[in-house]
Image 1 (cartoon, rainbow, N blue to C red):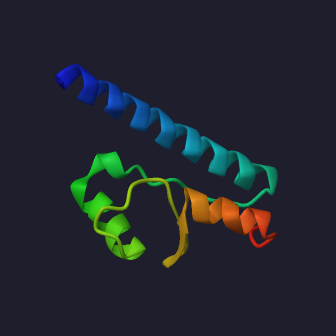
Image 2 (cartoon, rainbow, N blue to C red):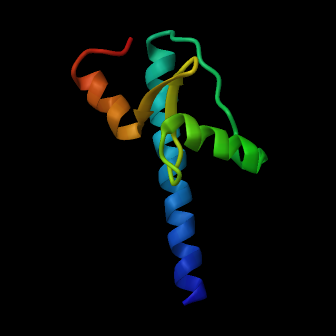
Length: 86
């Protein structure tokens, strides 16, 4: 059971990294300036992300434009498909 939980955690971590990378690649390709916030650095930073997202269990990546919440990975790329970001 512990090995399964560790495997699921690793898979989840890899998916988060992949999603972050895809968002960064899109923003870079459009020459959109951004900065990444490492929520693992502080529980307060993670809590702030979740509060701004309006979801107490929100997981990264979450996208913000200043203080405006833009959505998670899926919502971001749904907007890309609709031609909204960039």
